[in-house]
Image 1: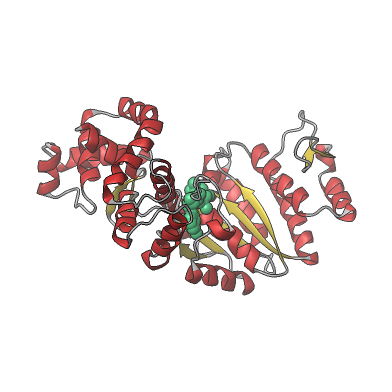
Image 2: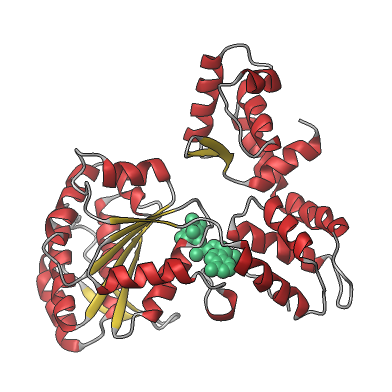
Length: 370
Ligand SMILES: Nc1ncnc2c1ncn2[C@@H]1O[C@H](COP(=O)(O)OP(=O)(O)OP(=O)(O)O)[C@@H](O)[C@H]1O
Ligand SMILES: [Mg+2]
């Protein structure tokens, strides 16, 4: 069986140790320090949080995923569902039903998954104030157990029409819940930063920041080599490092490329750099339609910038070298193109450097000769 896992939370043998980050996160939780974790997509934020929760003995994780949350109603439902799943004691469930009585809730067990679920009278819409009631329930739960509450993809709160009010309500209750630790994780860096570092934001300076980036080669290389060896495929350190580079050092993409390389090789076959493009082409074949759709959505100058960024690791996009590469005449046009690409989440900017969100898309552009 293919030993590489991607596109899902990893744990146990699939989780490559990140001891320093894990230690920091555990220490923060134990000292009651709220944390905001940020990193690009597929760097391992969610897996790290679950791993930290496992390490925190006696703690319960209340995990709330806010990915693509669009309405207050949706936000409240996600929070309540995670509470119901974290605490099944009848006395607490009674308390939950009475606190939210105005929403006419009813509890049941989902017949397919066996998970407790809660439903509400759909004619009664949840309002921002409902958030306060839900946070009071979390506080109540926190009196009985040590809690780590996680809001994942927290920046998506900004999608809500009443986002300012929602953030203010969340903050107003959370700041008094000093015995509960909150983790806020997010991948859209500029938005996450805005929430925690903009003086006008209710969450300004309310949490310590933790960066989740690539995994150190010193631990990731042996981890990946061991996985290849489990299927009798030997691979040198240099070749593994080349795989990591091809995948932009993004852990999820590295594992995906490794999974493809595994699929195109056989037991007993040593893996050399020659097989890497074969694995890469397997990813191209799977993602081609998405790549083509992206191309349709962007203009010519944006494409020129993308291709220029794909070919280099670090570039100064306002330099004459970059202009020459793109064939664009003015820096203002480059700026406008990059801004648009960031908005479309095709590229991102970190520490002054622009990178493609999907490194394989960049390799595909080069392979196709754009
Ligand atoms: N510690 C790790 N060891 C090995 N692989 C990892 C590790 N963390 C993450 N990965 C790889 O990255 C993938 C994505 O992990 P995870 O969902 O935790 O990341 P994320 O940053 O939360 O991603 P997203 O932004 O999509 O929510 C995993 O399926 C796995 O392939
Ligand atoms: Mg995640």
